[in-house]
Length: 490
Image 1 (tube, rainbow, N blue to C red):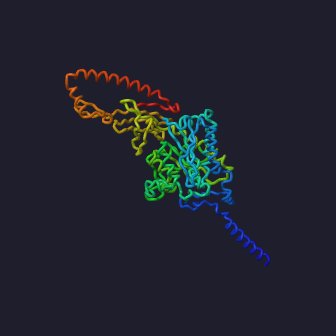
Image 2: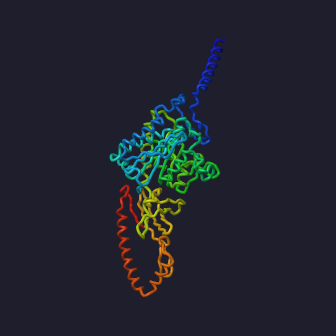
Image 3: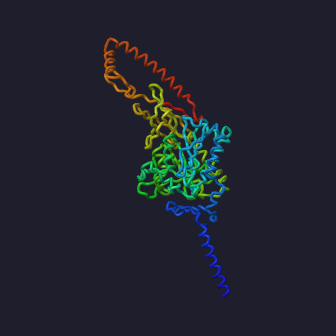
């Protein structure tokens, strides 16, 4: 009887303890999306070993928003020779969205590709904001000492946005201050909702404006809750789960593999083959940032899940940096170590043409830069490609290339389109002659000055020939970004 009484008393005590714990909120540390359908069949032990941590001490050891801002500004002062600090906007609560640009010529427009890393898209996934500060400091400390650091600083414009969602971080939740998931807030190709840009979240609008101001070649966002490199498409037209590859599926798989195989253990994943996954094959999502980057901004973006635990203890941050360091560096360096790069010129006067680059068989167009007409086309190596350059008012040109392990520099010189009217050759874009001037010129040619005209044409042709030879020599001696590119002019 005494034994039964003791057992009953123990059960009552246990029930009382559980009830008290729930009242104090001990179990409220689970993220709001812990049971999200998106993680069905992909079980994540996000708080393994940390179940007893309260929401108060989750961020213990992580930088607060104020501390992060101070760290960014101190970095800008310490490494002012290779960095620039600027803001792309503010969060709902008015916290500046600070960016660190790292380059040997920060703030200047050059014929170099631009890459961006974005951390803390989801407020309860803060590892990325810490890793980007680690990355910035490592590049500063190792520029001109480590070959990879030097390559990146001198050949890429790297932009780091440590926290896209500072309000969500402060609130310890996934969404922003309006409780909106920022990775569901972009225009979507399959389901049109919230198409009015002004109705989107300020953090989303800031990213969209940022990409209108800077032409990024590549990008990646840092998330938590898994260990995998994710690539487009993220959604499907019927909301079903299956592999949905975008036109540049090979290039994206190559980029994702660079990150995965440079990582300490991502490529050995038992859940994802080689540590990479197509987004829609994992779980479809809509309004995501990586699909929008590719479709609307010409930017190849990956979604990187860099920690199985969304919010690991701060003591693990140096280890996570060690595991992700080479992946983060190699992904940025791939912009200049692989792919096809070059500029587009006019054969008439040698000026840059902000034209377009396409690759036969790939339904995607890359736009050349507005100022220098430079382009950077990411492609998977070990294949033959036919590259085409176009520009309104000019004849298109194409050439076949074999892209091996290295990068290739490929410049295009386009000839103006001409139309024949009588004996007049005129550039359909450059001729500003009025009708009277045209008539007088025709009468001049048909008169007694025809012989003089032909002599003039011969002399002009000879001068053009000399000009073309001089220009080709100039093109072939243009500075190469990595020293390993093969230069071709067509």
